Image (cartoon, rainbow, N blue to C red; front, top):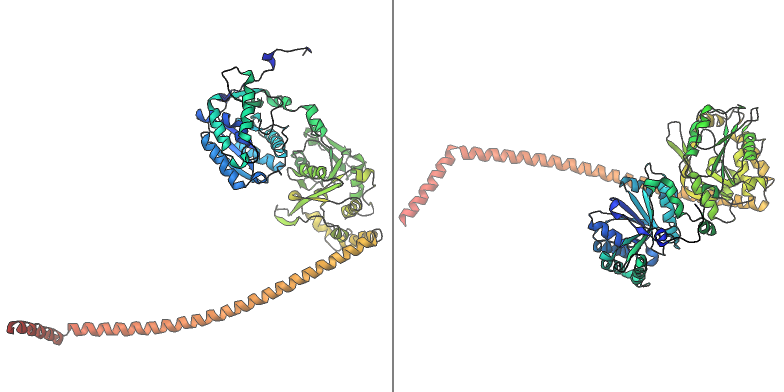
Length: 576
């Protein structure tokens, strides 16, 4: 495109938004009121055409008033605008994050309702909840099998790139009335008059007959594909704020895999390819010495570097070889028989970037048997005292900065055929803490190899090497840390003893209560049997009395007596 010193108005003015083109719109509002401040006119025009939009309010809105009140205000505003479906997700106000969970939830909602356009706040809005909502929406659309158009609307600030306008003159009064339904917000500041002023300004390019307009940045993804996103990603603006524009702006993560030829290597690598974090490298160290990778490696979407030293390697040797070939800012190990759940790496990177001065992050791990059933879960936050006496981190649950290796000299001890990861985490713990990221996203598959190492006769039995690791570190750690760990364990034992004593006391009380209940039940059963016996005798006596009475009624003497009584009554009436 030639560079010009000027362009004409028709080339720069926003165009009319083709609202009639869409029939299943979905709008994301970070807070109760954003949907009305940003798109009330558009929602009302859709309602007039018989198109019912769906609005998702992400947060409870309690930072600016009672959540229940603000939800009621949103519902009242929806009624003014002709009605649309409202869903409240109750996320914490001012804590919306672009997490894999939110991305997947948005994607599932858009797909479930077959949306043809998704409306969200602009990426450059000042409120962090608005920014996270917009970014999560972008990521969620990437996950969909079919493209859905995207529109940015203006709520907290004017759009930087307003590409389209909606003439809302005919429904301007409805919008003002709907905005005034948010009484809790009008007390903070006069939002309705200020948004109305923005809408009035937006009409400046539409002629005197238009009194108000809403601005949008429409990205026609369904027609133009992902290239339509480019106008929304202002590189200078985003870089000034420290936001990534392309995957290469994000920290590279090296996924380090040691393999002995386990056929499940393909599944392990597939779980890496399923991650939504885009900036990854996969390094596979052939610990069995095989020089060439399997043929299927070339078909993978991620580049895999196959490292072979042309000889067999024990576990720590293979780990060190992987570290030497890693180029990422962060590293994470994955054994060839284990897997990551989707979103595993993304949340760990986010945690490290959010914690200044911390260079390792860990998350929860699910241990499953060969049938896929959970047998154990590692879900405790990091405690330095516990790490001294036992390994608390499955190797693929921790993401760590490569600077711990390059600058601090952390390496795997090649004298340890097992528990080498425990020793490595102890090294790491002398330079940094570990931030805990809740949620289980690492899967450890308990298999025959794990069972073999639990055999006391096996050369690699953990108890044998546990003693060696502890002897090494008891001689290296400061006495204060060892003393603190011992005191902590003593305290934990005291707590366990107290809990045990309490549980035993509760058990005795319940056994006593059970015994009393059983005795009372036995007495009640005896009383019931006695009462049933008495009832049986009473019923028999009653039956005998009924039989006797029937015999009397049927006897000749009773009939004569009845006749005499009737005659006596007649004679008595005749004498009178």
